[in-house]
Image (cartoon, rainbow, N blue to C red; front, side, top):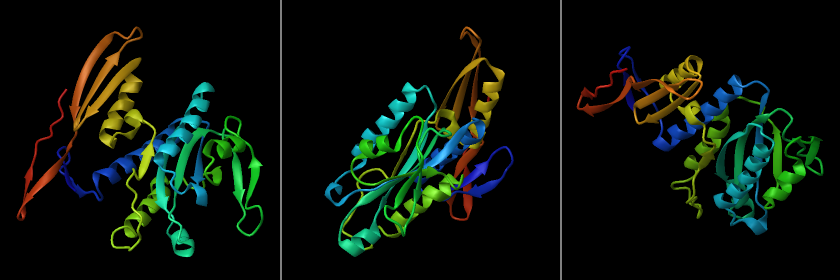
Length: 265
């Protein structure tokens, strides 16, 4: 996609589809929350399937995520997540079993989730280092109930690279791979991040609003952002409408047609 910044005149390109763009925004939102709110920790969580549960799909994952969401809500603690689903190609090649597993990044208070060590050459492979204060390892195992569970503090805060490699592996081995296995369900999912998932121009305006008004409401529709500033009693202070400085090019031959995109208040 070719974009123009109407304010600076800068032209740049973005890669991928709309779905990939939404995934990137979700990862960016999680990183923003991690750096903005003190006392939170990123966790990597992996869910696998046993041979008898190979038909388990994203609907079963939603039940598992409901358990986590309700537990943190009951404890009045913050909790956000992004997950991706991956096909287990090696398992298919070795055992002929068609399966998927899920990789996710969770953002929650430090110590609220268990810390597990994976030991590849020892039995058992998983060793509990420290249990969680909100969710214990037994809660994860029982709550999932379809295979193994692995939870550990994140060793990287570049979430797009960590989770994106699993989406990339899917696309590389999908079309023309010869595997009789297609994921008809969503490739990824996430919490509702609100304005934290907005593109930079809109997010920066929302951060400005949070520092300017006692309360505010924001809504982004396409390239339009509406901010309603409120006072202590939620009375209207002002309403601001802004438009993205970025617009798509529609290319005709070697020339480009540029749409409008002025910012108005």
